[in-house]
Image 1 (cartoon, rainbow over the protein chains, first blue to last red):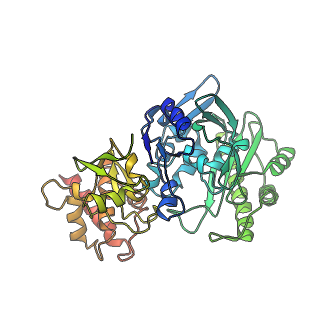
Image 2: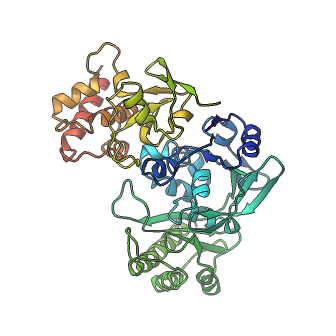
Length: 288
Length: 159
């Protein structure tokens, strides 16, 4: 039984080579719930808490992207300046657990656990984020859609660590909304992220907690693009928004569980998608 | 690091933790190994906030911190908020405002409120609610807790 408190990514990947079964732990807010409730026994642990490289983020003006270290806590994403660069991520971060969870929870942990209810994940999906992975042998980039495979399943190899996530800097509305039993401290029963990429003329919509992993509502996105001009504008009536939500809800595959029912989730995502699209149109109207 | 033993710095004192299992939470180690029972444990899943401690100045749930990874962090528990054994201003405000009933949630709330007032000298009602949204109290209905936080805030501002 070994606990390695790494301080560099190089130390992490060489420790992974030595202890291929080791559990990677960033904040611990997912792992420790499993451990405390006797759902998991940990043996070897590699802690990422003290790896400063994972706690940094920076804007690359040239490529128009933000690279966010896998260990940057939600508390930092919900605050300026980061929330001004990626507003949907700021909104999603603000809904994660309580301040105590947001102080240590991270996108690396969200992706590593890969729960369908992970609050950061619909945002990464709607933004077509890229996940950066490192091992002792190589580094590779995986588009988030290829990274998230199913309920708590992802494309990360046992010898890899998630080091960062890159998302684009976009012009246009971005929003996140979720439904749960109450306002604070709640795991999503259903969630949605909508992004209006005004420069490229598209609207992207992703849902959480309504399928084994995050769903992109690509059919609804295409339907909207055929009916509404999205390049540097977004003018629509309520009927279009409503139909958009209802079409998008058909792309989900929700289940009944202890947090909600499939029927309610289908209803909820339709409402969330409609609301987010109306908010996007409102903001575009204000900006013009 | 092999974890035959590791060091934790709690309330300014270095402690050696020996023969511990890697999965032990900071909450467990504080209470059962280091004799600091002020931090309470209830849900063990980050829902209730009764185990709130400061780790490098951030309020965190001790039940969700793997203790063996908290080496080289400065941990402050409710026992460490006052250096002279007297109640802190926040604790006194909880007493004065009647913000304590059964008292189980109080240590976590007191730590969370200290964290809030250190960051935000003049928090609004909404900021207070947000700051203690992760601390559950089943007795008071929160009214007197909000009153206690406002009293502590106003006393500090008047100083």
